[in-house]
Length: 190
Image 1 (cartoon, helix red, strand yellow):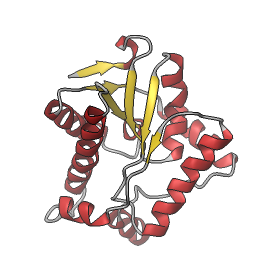
Image 2 (tube, rainbow, N blue to C red):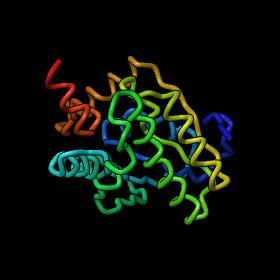
Image 3 (cartoon, rainbow, N blue to C red):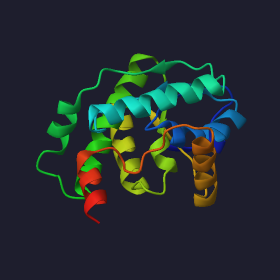
Image 4 (cartoon, rainbow, N blue to C red):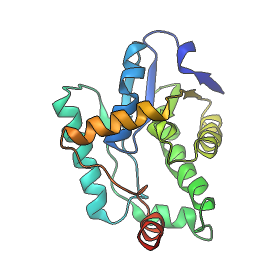
């Protein structure tokens, strides 16, 4: 089930998959305005190499500290092998994105269900660089497995870009590719 953020009951608990600090910054106010209780989940085995994963993780942690955000954050172990298994045979763009989203949203939904949280969402939905429709389809697939709902929201590209610029201006690391090795190679050979 898909539910618009404006239709969520006040004080709803939402398990949010966080792809990076910049995308979290772009949507944080939207969730804060609705008095929503967020639980953060940084599960991104697609990010490669490991040093890049660490840079993004550290940028997220520094952002949360600077903003004095006191939210529960779960960061599972880095399991890049799971990512390669998920996209094996689907390495071409945009097919690999679907299987990457599937992996991350299945784990997000599983963790939300384990914690008794009925709503999931992702910062991926904010980025104009991601395939939102495919991401929503995969989030819904995962949510259905665990009898959860997916929280949908929209932000304008202009707002997204302003929030990313704010994030970078504050000195946080901001990446120039989605995270997977395939997108990094594609970026370098363009």
